[in-house]
Amino acid sequence: MLKHESIETNAALLIVMTLAAISIGGLVEIVPLHFIEGTVEDVRIVDGPNKGKQAVRPYTPLEQLGRDIYQREGCYTCHSQMIRPFRDEALRYGHYSLAAESQYDHPFQWGSMRRGPDLARVGGKYSSAWHVKHLTQPTSVVPESIMPNYPWLSETPLDVVGLADKMSTLKMVGVPYSHTKIEFDANVEKFGEDVAKKLDINMAEKNLEAQAKLGDFDGNPDKLSEMDALVAYLQILGTMIDFSKHDEAEFVKFR
Amino acid sequence: MSNKHKITKDPLTGAETTGHVWDDTLQEFNNPLPTWWLWAFYATIIFSIVYWIIYPSWPTNFAKRGFIEGSTSISFKADSIKDGKKIVGGGEEMSVPWNTRALLAHEMQNDPNELKRQAMVKKVAGMALADVAKDPDSSAFVRAYGKGIFGDYCAACHQAGGQGVRGHYPNLVDDAWLWGGDPADIETTIRKGRKGNMPAHKATLSDQQITEAANYVLSLSGEAVDTGLAASGKEIFNTKGCSGCHTPAATGMKALGSANLTDKIWTQAHVPEADTIEAKVKAVKAVISGGIQREMPSWEARLSGDEIKVLVAYLKLLSSN
Image 1 (cartoon, chains in turn brown, green):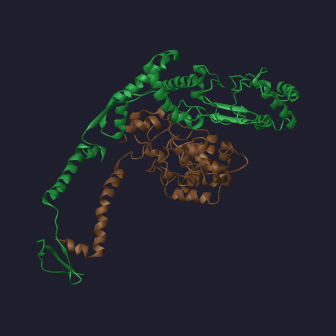
Image 2 (cartoon, chains in turn orange, brown; image 1 turned 90 degrees about the vertical axis):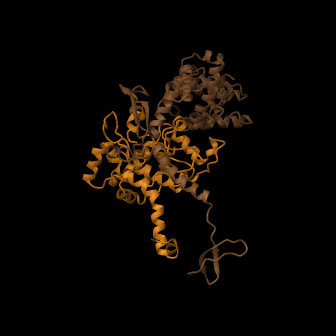
Protein backbone atom coordinates (compact mmCIF):
# COMPACT_ATOMS: atom_id res chain seq x y z
CA MET A 1 0.00 0.00 0.00
CA LEU A 2 1.30 3.44 -1.06
CA LYS A 3 1.68 5.56 2.02
CA HIS A 4 0.89 9.24 1.94
CA GLU A 5 4.23 10.06 3.43
CA SER A 6 6.11 8.42 0.58
CA ILE A 7 4.18 10.60 -1.93
CA GLU A 8 4.82 13.77 0.02
CA THR A 9 8.51 13.10 0.35
CA ASN A 10 9.02 12.24 -3.33
CA ALA A 11 8.67 15.37 -5.47
CA ALA A 12 8.50 13.57 -8.82
CA LEU A 13 5.85 11.14 -7.63
CA LEU A 14 3.88 14.02 -6.08
CA ILE A 15 3.90 15.92 -9.39
CA VAL A 16 2.77 12.87 -11.37
CA MET A 17 -0.01 12.01 -8.94
CA THR A 18 -1.16 15.67 -8.76
CA LEU A 19 -1.36 15.91 -12.54
CA ALA A 20 -3.30 12.67 -12.68
CA ALA A 21 -5.76 13.92 -10.07
CA ILE A 22 -6.42 17.32 -11.63
CA SER A 23 -6.75 15.97 -15.18
CA ILE A 24 -9.70 13.76 -14.27
CA GLY A 25 -12.19 16.65 -14.32
CA GLY A 26 -10.94 17.87 -17.68
CA LEU A 27 -10.94 14.40 -19.22
CA VAL A 28 -14.49 13.71 -18.07
CA GLU A 29 -15.66 16.93 -19.73
CA ILE A 30 -13.57 16.85 -22.91
CA VAL A 31 -13.21 13.20 -23.95
CA PRO A 32 -16.94 12.49 -24.44
CA LEU A 33 -17.19 15.45 -26.86
CA HIS A 34 -15.05 13.54 -29.31
CA PHE A 35 -17.47 10.62 -29.25
CA ILE A 36 -20.71 12.56 -29.56
CA GLU A 37 -21.95 12.95 -33.07
CA GLY A 38 -22.94 16.57 -33.58
CA THR A 39 -20.79 18.23 -30.92
CA VAL A 40 -20.39 20.77 -33.71
CA GLU A 41 -23.80 21.09 -35.35
CA ASP A 42 -24.13 20.46 -39.07
CA VAL A 43 -26.03 23.57 -40.20
CA ARG A 44 -26.85 23.86 -43.91
CA ILE A 45 -28.16 26.74 -45.96
CA VAL A 46 -31.89 26.15 -46.46
CA ASP A 47 -32.61 27.93 -49.72
CA GLY A 48 -31.09 30.05 -52.46
CA PRO A 49 -28.27 29.20 -54.87
CA ASN A 50 -26.10 27.73 -52.10
CA LYS A 51 -28.84 25.47 -50.75
CA GLY A 52 -27.39 22.50 -48.89
CA LYS A 53 -23.95 24.07 -48.43
CA GLN A 54 -22.45 24.81 -45.03
CA ALA A 55 -24.00 27.90 -43.44
CA VAL A 56 -20.98 28.79 -41.31
CA ARG A 57 -17.86 29.71 -43.26
CA PRO A 58 -14.37 30.74 -42.17
CA TYR A 59 -13.70 34.47 -41.96
CA THR A 60 -12.65 36.35 -45.07
CA PRO A 61 -9.14 37.85 -44.96
CA LEU A 62 -10.50 41.29 -43.97
CA GLU A 63 -12.70 39.82 -41.23
CA GLN A 64 -9.86 37.64 -39.98
CA LEU A 65 -7.54 40.65 -39.64
CA GLY A 66 -10.38 42.46 -37.86
CA ARG A 67 -10.61 39.53 -35.52
CA ASP A 68 -6.88 39.83 -34.82
CA ILE A 69 -7.44 43.49 -33.88
CA TYR A 70 -10.38 42.44 -31.69
CA GLN A 71 -7.97 40.19 -29.81
CA ARG A 72 -5.11 42.68 -29.79
CA GLU A 73 -7.28 45.34 -28.18
CA GLY A 74 -8.56 42.84 -25.63
CA CYS A 75 -12.26 43.24 -26.52
CA TYR A 76 -12.83 39.75 -25.11
CA THR A 77 -11.96 40.90 -21.59
CA CYS A 78 -15.28 42.79 -21.42
CA HIS A 79 -17.40 41.30 -24.21
CA SER A 80 -18.46 37.68 -24.48
CA GLN A 81 -19.52 36.00 -27.70
CA MET A 82 -21.70 33.30 -26.23
CA ILE A 83 -25.45 33.59 -25.92
CA ARG A 84 -26.61 30.93 -23.53
CA PRO A 85 -29.91 29.05 -23.96
CA PHE A 86 -31.78 31.05 -21.31
CA ARG A 87 -35.01 32.97 -21.73
CA ASP A 88 -33.60 36.36 -20.73
CA GLU A 89 -30.68 35.98 -23.12
CA ALA A 90 -32.95 34.83 -25.94
CA LEU A 91 -35.09 37.95 -25.46
CA ARG A 92 -32.15 40.30 -25.29
CA TYR A 93 -29.57 38.91 -27.69
CA GLY A 94 -31.42 36.51 -29.97
CA HIS A 95 -30.87 32.84 -30.71
CA TYR A 96 -28.38 31.03 -28.48
CA SER A 97 -24.93 30.49 -29.92
CA LEU A 98 -24.23 27.21 -31.63
CA ALA A 99 -20.90 25.43 -31.43
CA ALA A 100 -20.91 25.52 -35.24
CA GLU A 101 -20.76 29.30 -35.19
CA SER A 102 -17.35 29.39 -33.56
CA GLN A 103 -15.90 26.31 -35.22
CA TYR A 104 -13.39 28.37 -37.24
CA ASP A 105 -12.37 30.60 -34.32
CA HIS A 106 -8.83 29.98 -33.11
CA PRO A 107 -9.02 30.71 -30.28
CA PHE A 108 -12.76 31.11 -29.74
CA GLN A 109 -13.96 34.39 -28.20
CA TRP A 110 -16.72 32.97 -25.97
CA GLY A 111 -15.30 34.89 -23.03
CA SER A 112 -16.34 34.63 -19.42
CA MET A 113 -16.96 38.27 -18.52
CA ARG A 114 -19.65 40.72 -19.55
CA ARG A 115 -18.74 44.22 -18.54
CA GLY A 116 -20.24 45.19 -21.86
CA PRO A 117 -22.98 43.38 -23.78
CA ASP A 118 -22.55 40.07 -25.53
CA LEU A 119 -21.43 40.51 -29.14
CA ALA A 120 -22.24 37.09 -30.58
CA ARG A 121 -25.06 38.57 -32.72
CA VAL A 122 -23.96 42.17 -33.05
CA GLY A 123 -23.55 41.81 -36.84
CA GLY A 124 -26.04 44.02 -38.71
CA LYS A 125 -27.49 45.41 -35.46
CA TYR A 126 -25.95 48.84 -35.99
CA SER A 127 -24.79 50.69 -39.07
CA SER A 128 -21.07 50.68 -39.82
CA ALA A 129 -21.05 54.45 -39.30
CA TRP A 130 -22.38 53.87 -35.78
CA HIS A 131 -19.59 51.39 -35.07
CA VAL A 132 -16.96 53.87 -36.26
CA LYS A 133 -18.38 56.61 -34.07
CA HIS A 134 -18.80 54.26 -31.14
CA LEU A 135 -15.34 52.70 -31.33
CA THR A 136 -13.71 56.11 -31.70
CA GLN A 137 -15.54 57.52 -28.68
CA PRO A 138 -18.23 55.29 -27.12
CA THR A 139 -19.69 58.06 -24.95
CA SER A 140 -20.61 60.04 -28.07
CA VAL A 141 -23.48 57.61 -28.65
CA VAL A 142 -23.84 55.83 -25.32
CA PRO A 143 -23.33 58.54 -22.66
CA GLU A 144 -23.23 56.08 -19.77
CA SER A 145 -20.65 53.82 -21.44
CA ILE A 146 -17.46 52.90 -19.58
CA MET A 147 -15.80 51.52 -22.71
CA PRO A 148 -12.44 53.13 -23.56
CA ASN A 149 -11.91 55.17 -26.74
CA TYR A 150 -10.13 53.55 -29.67
CA PRO A 151 -9.37 56.61 -31.83
CA TRP A 152 -6.30 55.10 -33.46
CA LEU A 153 -8.27 52.45 -35.34
CA SER A 154 -9.38 54.92 -38.03
CA GLU A 155 -5.94 56.48 -38.25
CA THR A 156 -3.82 53.34 -38.40
CA PRO A 157 -3.40 51.74 -41.83
CA LEU A 158 -4.30 48.04 -41.80
CA ASP A 159 -1.17 45.89 -41.69
CA VAL A 160 -1.63 43.23 -44.37
CA VAL A 161 1.95 41.96 -44.23
CA GLY A 162 1.94 38.24 -43.48
CA LEU A 163 -1.74 37.85 -44.34
CA ALA A 164 -1.14 34.72 -46.41
CA ASP A 165 1.07 33.26 -43.67
CA LYS A 166 -1.62 33.90 -41.09
CA MET A 167 -4.17 32.10 -43.23
CA SER A 168 -1.77 29.21 -43.83
CA THR A 169 -1.23 28.91 -40.09
CA LEU A 170 -4.97 28.79 -39.49
CA LYS A 171 -5.19 26.19 -42.22
CA MET A 172 -2.73 24.05 -40.26
CA VAL A 173 -5.11 24.02 -37.30
CA GLY A 174 -8.06 23.04 -39.44
CA VAL A 175 -9.59 26.18 -40.98
CA PRO A 176 -10.34 25.27 -44.59
CA TYR A 177 -8.56 28.07 -46.45
CA SER A 178 -7.33 26.80 -49.80
CA HIS A 179 -3.91 26.77 -51.41
CA THR A 180 -4.22 24.21 -54.15
CA LYS A 181 -6.83 23.56 -56.82
CA ILE A 182 -7.94 20.42 -54.99
CA GLU A 183 -8.52 22.34 -51.77
CA PHE A 184 -10.34 25.07 -53.68
CA ASP A 185 -12.65 22.53 -55.31
CA ALA A 186 -13.33 20.96 -51.92
CA ASN A 187 -14.38 24.41 -50.66
CA VAL A 188 -16.65 24.90 -53.67
CA GLU A 189 -18.30 21.62 -52.75
CA LYS A 190 -18.56 22.57 -49.08
CA PHE A 191 -19.42 26.29 -49.16
CA GLY A 192 -20.34 27.14 -52.75
CA GLU A 193 -18.17 28.90 -55.30
CA ASP A 194 -18.66 32.51 -54.17
CA VAL A 195 -17.51 31.64 -50.65
CA ALA A 196 -14.70 29.37 -51.85
CA LYS A 197 -13.20 32.28 -53.76
CA LYS A 198 -13.01 34.33 -50.57
CA LEU A 199 -11.13 31.51 -48.83
CA ASP A 200 -8.40 31.23 -51.46
CA ILE A 201 -5.07 32.15 -49.85
CA ASN A 202 -3.57 33.03 -53.25
CA MET A 203 -6.21 35.73 -53.68
CA ALA A 204 -6.14 36.93 -50.07
CA GLU A 205 -4.87 40.49 -50.52
CA LYS A 206 -7.01 41.12 -53.57
CA ASN A 207 -10.11 39.82 -51.77
CA LEU A 208 -9.30 41.91 -48.74
CA GLU A 209 -9.02 45.12 -50.73
CA ALA A 210 -12.18 44.37 -52.69
CA GLN A 211 -14.23 43.74 -49.55
CA ALA A 212 -12.92 46.87 -47.83
CA LYS A 213 -13.68 48.95 -50.90
CA LEU A 214 -17.17 47.54 -51.38
CA GLY A 215 -18.13 47.71 -47.71
CA ASP A 216 -16.37 51.01 -46.91
CA PHE A 217 -16.69 50.06 -43.27
CA ASP A 218 -14.76 53.02 -41.84
CA GLY A 219 -16.57 55.64 -43.95
CA ASN A 220 -13.32 56.66 -45.63
CA PRO A 221 -13.10 55.06 -49.08
CA ASP A 222 -9.56 56.34 -49.64
CA LYS A 223 -8.02 54.53 -46.72
CA LEU A 224 -7.66 50.90 -45.71
CA SER A 225 -7.61 51.27 -41.94
CA GLU A 226 -7.76 48.95 -38.96
CA MET A 227 -11.29 50.28 -38.46
CA ASP A 228 -12.27 48.75 -41.84
CA ALA A 229 -11.17 45.31 -40.67
CA LEU A 230 -12.63 45.48 -37.17
CA VAL A 231 -16.03 46.75 -38.31
CA ALA A 232 -16.13 44.15 -41.11
CA TYR A 233 -15.55 41.51 -38.44
CA LEU A 234 -18.19 42.92 -36.08
CA GLN A 235 -20.74 43.13 -38.89
CA ILE A 236 -20.43 39.42 -39.71
CA LEU A 237 -20.76 38.18 -36.11
CA GLY A 238 -23.71 35.87 -35.65
CA THR A 239 -25.18 36.53 -39.09
CA MET A 240 -24.13 33.39 -40.96
CA ILE A 241 -27.08 31.24 -39.90
CA ASP A 242 -30.58 32.43 -40.80
CA PHE A 243 -32.50 31.09 -37.81
CA SER A 244 -35.85 32.09 -39.28
CA LYS A 245 -35.45 29.16 -41.67
CA HIS A 246 -34.55 26.50 -39.11
CA ASP A 247 -36.76 24.43 -36.82
CA GLU A 248 -35.59 24.74 -33.21
CA ALA A 249 -35.89 20.97 -32.85
CA GLU A 250 -33.04 20.65 -35.33
CA PHE A 251 -30.57 22.15 -32.84
CA VAL A 252 -32.04 20.40 -29.82
CA LYS A 253 -31.28 17.02 -31.33
CA PHE A 254 -27.57 17.74 -31.10
CA ARG A 255 -27.78 17.81 -27.31
CA MET B 1 14.11 15.10 5.98
CA SER B 2 11.69 13.41 8.26
CA ASN B 3 12.52 10.42 10.34
CA LYS B 4 10.37 7.83 11.94
CA HIS B 5 9.94 8.74 15.52
CA LYS B 6 7.85 7.73 18.38
CA ILE B 7 4.46 9.38 18.78
CA THR B 8 4.63 11.55 21.85
CA LYS B 9 2.04 13.32 23.93
CA ASP B 10 2.10 17.03 24.71
CA PRO B 11 2.10 17.29 28.49
CA LEU B 12 -0.02 20.47 28.54
CA THR B 13 -2.88 19.65 26.14
CA GLY B 14 -2.61 15.90 25.93
CA ALA B 15 -2.56 16.08 22.11
CA GLU B 16 -0.52 13.49 20.28
CA THR B 17 2.11 14.28 17.66
CA THR B 18 2.07 12.72 14.20
CA GLY B 19 5.30 10.90 14.86
CA HIS B 20 7.22 12.76 12.11
CA VAL B 21 10.29 14.75 13.13
CA TRP B 22 12.03 17.20 10.82
CA ASP B 23 15.42 18.74 11.45
CA ASP B 24 15.94 16.81 14.67
CA THR B 25 13.32 18.59 16.79
CA LEU B 26 10.50 19.91 14.62
CA GLN B 27 7.29 17.95 15.26
CA GLU B 28 3.63 18.53 14.51
CA PHE B 29 0.49 17.75 16.44
CA ASN B 30 -2.03 15.38 14.98
CA ASN B 31 -5.36 17.19 15.10
CA PRO B 32 -7.74 15.09 13.01
CA LEU B 33 -11.06 16.46 11.77
CA PRO B 34 -13.99 15.83 14.10
CA THR B 35 -15.59 12.54 13.18
CA TRP B 36 -18.97 14.10 12.32
CA TRP B 37 -17.20 16.51 9.95
CA LEU B 38 -15.35 13.67 8.23
CA TRP B 39 -18.58 11.73 7.74
CA ALA B 40 -20.31 14.85 6.39
CA PHE B 41 -17.53 15.03 3.83
CA TYR B 42 -18.12 11.41 2.79
CA ALA B 43 -21.85 12.17 2.63
CA THR B 44 -21.23 15.00 0.10
CA ILE B 45 -19.40 12.50 -2.13
CA ILE B 46 -22.38 10.15 -2.02
CA PHE B 47 -24.74 13.09 -2.61
CA SER B 48 -22.76 14.15 -5.70
CA ILE B 49 -23.27 10.72 -7.24
CA VAL B 50 -27.01 10.82 -6.58
CA TYR B 51 -27.15 14.38 -7.90
CA TRP B 52 -25.23 13.33 -11.00
CA ILE B 53 -27.90 10.77 -11.78
CA ILE B 54 -30.88 13.01 -11.01
CA TYR B 55 -29.43 16.19 -12.62
CA PRO B 56 -29.35 14.26 -15.12
CA SER B 57 -25.94 13.64 -16.56
CA TRP B 58 -25.58 9.92 -15.98
CA PRO B 59 -25.59 8.34 -19.44
CA THR B 60 -28.54 5.99 -19.72
CA ASN B 61 -28.68 5.17 -23.39
CA PHE B 62 -24.98 4.94 -23.98
CA ALA B 63 -25.03 2.63 -26.96
CA LYS B 64 -27.45 4.79 -28.90
CA ARG B 65 -26.76 8.34 -27.83
CA GLY B 66 -23.27 8.29 -26.34
CA PHE B 67 -22.70 10.23 -23.16
CA ILE B 68 -25.51 12.72 -23.37
CA GLU B 69 -28.77 11.06 -22.55
CA GLY B 70 -29.86 11.53 -18.96
CA SER B 71 -32.56 9.85 -16.91
CA THR B 72 -35.30 12.48 -17.36
CA SER B 73 -36.87 13.95 -20.43
CA ILE B 74 -38.42 17.24 -21.41
CA SER B 75 -41.10 18.04 -23.94
CA PHE B 76 -41.76 20.96 -26.26
CA LYS B 77 -43.42 21.63 -29.58
CA ALA B 78 -41.18 21.75 -32.63
CA ASP B 79 -41.48 24.65 -35.07
CA SER B 80 -43.23 24.36 -38.38
CA ILE B 81 -41.82 25.88 -41.51
CA LYS B 82 -44.15 26.34 -44.43
CA ASP B 83 -43.25 28.27 -47.59
CA GLY B 84 -40.24 29.74 -45.82
CA LYS B 85 -42.38 31.06 -42.96
CA LYS B 86 -41.52 29.78 -39.51
CA ILE B 87 -44.15 29.31 -36.82
CA VAL B 88 -42.50 28.85 -33.45
CA GLY B 89 -44.07 25.91 -31.65
CA GLY B 90 -46.27 25.14 -34.66
CA GLY B 91 -44.95 21.61 -35.16
CA GLU B 92 -45.45 18.32 -33.41
CA GLU B 93 -44.86 17.62 -29.72
CA MET B 94 -41.40 16.23 -29.01
CA SER B 95 -39.98 14.55 -25.94
CA VAL B 96 -36.21 14.52 -25.68
CA PRO B 97 -33.63 13.76 -22.98
CA TRP B 98 -33.29 16.76 -20.66
CA ASN B 99 -30.95 19.42 -21.98
CA THR B 100 -30.78 23.19 -21.69
CA ARG B 101 -31.74 23.84 -25.30
CA ALA B 102 -34.91 21.78 -24.94
CA LEU B 103 -35.54 23.46 -21.59
CA LEU B 104 -35.41 26.87 -23.27
CA ALA B 105 -37.86 25.75 -25.96
CA HIS B 106 -40.09 24.31 -23.24
CA GLU B 107 -39.97 27.53 -21.19
CA MET B 108 -40.71 29.73 -24.18
CA GLN B 109 -43.88 27.68 -24.67
CA ASN B 110 -44.93 26.99 -21.07
CA ASP B 111 -43.39 29.40 -18.56
CA PRO B 112 -46.27 31.43 -17.04
CA ASN B 113 -44.37 34.71 -17.20
CA GLU B 114 -43.31 34.08 -20.78
CA LEU B 115 -46.89 33.25 -21.77
CA LYS B 116 -48.05 36.45 -20.06
CA ARG B 117 -45.45 38.43 -22.00
CA GLN B 118 -46.47 36.86 -25.29
CA ALA B 119 -50.15 37.45 -24.56
CA MET B 120 -49.56 41.12 -23.74
CA VAL B 121 -47.39 41.67 -26.84
CA LYS B 122 -50.14 40.11 -28.94
CA LYS B 123 -52.88 42.10 -27.23
CA VAL B 124 -51.15 45.46 -27.67
CA ALA B 125 -50.20 44.66 -31.27
CA GLY B 126 -53.86 44.08 -32.06
CA MET B 127 -55.08 47.31 -30.47
CA ALA B 128 -55.53 50.72 -32.02
CA LEU B 129 -53.01 53.20 -30.60
CA ALA B 130 -55.73 55.38 -29.09
CA ASP B 131 -57.06 52.36 -27.17
CA VAL B 132 -53.57 51.53 -25.84
CA ALA B 133 -53.36 54.95 -24.22
CA LYS B 134 -56.81 54.49 -22.66
CA ASP B 135 -56.20 51.02 -21.22
CA PRO B 136 -53.99 51.35 -18.10
CA ASP B 137 -52.79 47.73 -18.28
CA SER B 138 -51.73 48.01 -21.89
CA SER B 139 -50.09 51.39 -21.59
CA ALA B 140 -48.21 50.24 -18.47
CA PHE B 141 -46.99 47.23 -20.43
CA VAL B 142 -45.97 49.36 -23.39
CA ARG B 143 -44.08 51.75 -21.12
CA ALA B 144 -42.21 48.91 -19.40
CA TYR B 145 -41.69 46.43 -22.22
CA GLY B 146 -41.33 49.04 -24.96
CA LYS B 147 -38.67 50.72 -22.90
CA GLY B 148 -36.83 47.41 -22.73
CA ILE B 149 -36.85 46.82 -26.50
CA PHE B 150 -36.10 50.46 -27.17
CA GLY B 151 -33.13 50.28 -24.80
CA ASP B 152 -31.80 47.16 -26.47
CA TYR B 153 -32.25 48.05 -30.10
CA CYS B 154 -32.83 51.78 -30.52
CA ALA B 155 -31.15 53.67 -27.69
CA ALA B 156 -27.63 53.05 -28.99
CA CYS B 157 -28.37 55.61 -31.71
CA HIS B 158 -31.52 57.49 -30.70
CA GLN B 159 -30.43 57.66 -27.02
CA ALA B 160 -32.24 56.39 -23.96
CA GLY B 161 -34.83 59.18 -23.96
CA GLY B 162 -35.27 59.14 -27.74
CA GLN B 163 -33.71 62.59 -28.06
CA GLY B 164 -31.22 61.46 -30.72
CA VAL B 165 -27.81 62.94 -31.49
CA ARG B 166 -27.90 66.05 -33.63
CA GLY B 167 -25.92 65.54 -36.80
CA HIS B 168 -26.29 61.78 -36.69
CA TYR B 169 -29.51 60.30 -35.32
CA PRO B 170 -32.92 61.98 -35.43
CA ASN B 171 -34.84 63.00 -32.35
CA LEU B 172 -37.89 60.74 -31.91
CA VAL B 173 -39.76 62.74 -29.28
CA ASP B 174 -40.27 66.05 -31.09
CA ASP B 175 -43.25 64.99 -33.22
CA ALA B 176 -41.36 65.67 -36.45
CA TRP B 177 -40.88 62.52 -38.52
CA LEU B 178 -38.61 62.50 -41.56
CA TRP B 179 -40.15 59.31 -42.93
CA GLY B 180 -43.69 59.91 -41.73
CA GLY B 181 -45.19 59.77 -38.26
CA ASP B 182 -48.24 57.60 -38.93
CA PRO B 183 -48.04 54.32 -37.03
CA ALA B 184 -47.85 52.49 -40.36
CA ASP B 185 -44.96 54.70 -41.53
CA ILE B 186 -43.03 54.22 -38.30
CA GLU B 187 -43.64 50.49 -38.51
CA THR B 188 -42.22 50.38 -42.04
CA THR B 189 -39.21 52.39 -40.92
CA ILE B 190 -38.44 49.98 -38.10
CA ARG B 191 -39.18 46.90 -40.19
CA LYS B 192 -37.18 47.79 -43.27
CA GLY B 193 -34.66 50.33 -42.00
CA ARG B 194 -33.90 53.59 -43.81
CA LYS B 195 -31.08 55.07 -45.81
CA GLY B 196 -31.00 58.85 -45.64
CA ASN B 197 -28.98 60.53 -48.35
CA MET B 198 -28.40 64.14 -49.20
CA PRO B 199 -25.72 64.76 -51.81
CA ALA B 200 -22.72 66.92 -50.93
CA HIS B 201 -22.86 70.25 -52.72
CA LYS B 202 -19.33 71.52 -52.25
CA ALA B 203 -18.40 70.43 -55.78
CA THR B 204 -21.51 71.78 -57.52
CA LEU B 205 -22.07 75.07 -55.68
CA SER B 206 -19.63 77.88 -54.95
CA ASP B 207 -18.99 78.94 -51.36
CA GLN B 208 -20.97 82.13 -52.00
CA GLN B 209 -23.93 80.12 -53.36
CA ILE B 210 -23.85 77.80 -50.35
CA THR B 211 -23.80 80.84 -48.03
CA GLU B 212 -26.85 82.25 -49.81
CA ALA B 213 -28.72 78.95 -49.68
CA ALA B 214 -27.90 78.65 -45.96
CA ASN B 215 -29.29 82.13 -45.33
CA TYR B 216 -32.48 81.20 -47.15
CA VAL B 217 -32.87 77.96 -45.19
CA LEU B 218 -32.43 79.84 -41.90
CA SER B 219 -34.93 82.49 -43.00
CA LEU B 220 -37.54 79.73 -43.38
CA SER B 221 -37.30 79.10 -39.66
CA GLY B 222 -37.61 82.78 -38.90
CA GLU B 223 -33.96 83.50 -38.20
CA ALA B 224 -32.89 87.13 -38.64
CA VAL B 225 -30.68 86.64 -41.68
CA ASP B 226 -29.45 88.99 -44.37
CA THR B 227 -32.54 89.35 -46.57
CA GLY B 228 -30.52 90.03 -49.69
CA LEU B 229 -28.52 86.83 -49.31
CA ALA B 230 -31.70 84.93 -48.47
CA ALA B 231 -33.42 86.16 -51.62
CA SER B 232 -30.60 84.93 -53.85
CA GLY B 233 -30.54 81.78 -51.74
CA LYS B 234 -34.17 81.15 -52.62
CA GLU B 235 -33.20 81.29 -56.28
CA ILE B 236 -30.50 78.71 -55.71
CA PHE B 237 -32.86 76.57 -53.64
CA ASN B 238 -35.35 76.44 -56.48
CA THR B 239 -32.94 76.07 -59.39
CA LYS B 240 -30.02 74.03 -58.10
CA GLY B 241 -31.93 70.94 -57.02
CA CYS B 242 -32.73 71.59 -53.34
CA SER B 243 -36.47 71.91 -53.99
CA GLY B 244 -36.42 68.59 -55.82
CA CYS B 245 -36.30 66.74 -52.52
CA HIS B 246 -37.30 69.38 -50.00
CA THR B 247 -40.19 70.60 -52.24
CA PRO B 248 -40.55 74.25 -53.37
CA ALA B 249 -42.35 75.02 -50.10
CA ALA B 250 -39.36 73.44 -48.29
CA THR B 251 -41.64 71.25 -46.20
CA GLY B 252 -39.90 68.00 -47.15
CA MET B 253 -41.19 64.72 -48.53
CA LYS B 254 -41.70 61.69 -46.35
CA ALA B 255 -41.17 59.29 -49.26
CA LEU B 256 -37.55 60.51 -49.50
CA GLY B 257 -37.04 61.27 -45.84
CA SER B 258 -36.15 64.83 -46.80
CA ALA B 259 -36.47 67.21 -43.89
CA ASN B 260 -39.05 69.91 -43.41
CA LEU B 261 -36.90 73.06 -43.35
CA THR B 262 -39.61 75.35 -42.04
CA ASP B 263 -40.34 73.77 -38.67
CA LYS B 264 -37.35 75.12 -36.68
CA ILE B 265 -36.31 71.53 -35.98
CA TRP B 266 -32.68 70.78 -36.77
CA THR B 267 -31.72 67.11 -36.83
CA GLN B 268 -28.52 67.63 -38.74
CA ALA B 269 -27.23 71.21 -38.57
CA HIS B 270 -26.00 72.41 -35.18
CA VAL B 271 -28.17 75.52 -35.32
CA PRO B 272 -29.69 75.47 -31.81
CA GLU B 273 -26.21 75.29 -30.30
CA ALA B 274 -25.04 78.35 -32.28
CA ASP B 275 -25.21 81.72 -30.52
CA THR B 276 -24.68 84.13 -33.38
CA ILE B 277 -26.28 84.28 -36.79
CA GLU B 278 -22.83 83.77 -38.36
CA ALA B 279 -22.42 80.52 -36.43
CA LYS B 280 -25.87 79.40 -37.53
CA VAL B 281 -25.07 80.08 -41.16
CA LYS B 282 -21.83 78.17 -40.74
CA ALA B 283 -23.68 75.18 -39.25
CA VAL B 284 -26.16 75.01 -42.15
CA LYS B 285 -23.36 75.52 -44.68
CA ALA B 286 -21.55 72.49 -43.27
CA VAL B 287 -24.57 70.30 -44.02
CA ILE B 288 -25.15 71.70 -47.51
CA SER B 289 -21.54 71.30 -48.55
CA GLY B 290 -20.89 67.92 -46.91
CA GLY B 291 -24.24 66.25 -47.51
CA ILE B 292 -25.78 63.58 -45.29
CA GLN B 293 -25.23 59.84 -45.22
CA ARG B 294 -27.42 58.18 -42.65
CA GLU B 295 -28.46 54.59 -42.23
CA MET B 296 -30.89 52.86 -39.95
CA PRO B 297 -30.67 49.05 -39.99
CA SER B 298 -33.66 46.83 -40.69
CA TRP B 299 -35.13 45.18 -37.61
CA GLU B 300 -37.58 42.65 -38.99
CA ALA B 301 -35.08 39.83 -38.57
CA ARG B 302 -34.56 40.62 -34.88
CA LEU B 303 -38.00 41.76 -33.75
CA SER B 304 -41.29 40.04 -34.42
CA GLY B 305 -44.05 41.96 -36.19
CA ASP B 306 -45.97 42.20 -32.91
CA GLU B 307 -42.93 43.48 -31.03
CA ILE B 308 -42.45 46.18 -33.67
CA LYS B 309 -46.06 47.23 -33.11
CA VAL B 310 -45.40 47.51 -29.36
CA LEU B 311 -42.34 49.61 -30.17
CA VAL B 312 -44.44 51.92 -32.35
CA ALA B 313 -46.91 52.31 -29.48
CA TYR B 314 -44.00 53.11 -27.15
CA LEU B 315 -42.64 55.74 -29.55
CA LYS B 316 -46.07 57.30 -29.86
CA LEU B 317 -46.37 57.46 -26.06
CA LEU B 318 -42.88 58.99 -25.89
CA SER B 319 -43.53 61.67 -28.48
CA SER B 320 -47.01 62.53 -27.22
CA ASN B 321 -45.65 63.45 -23.79
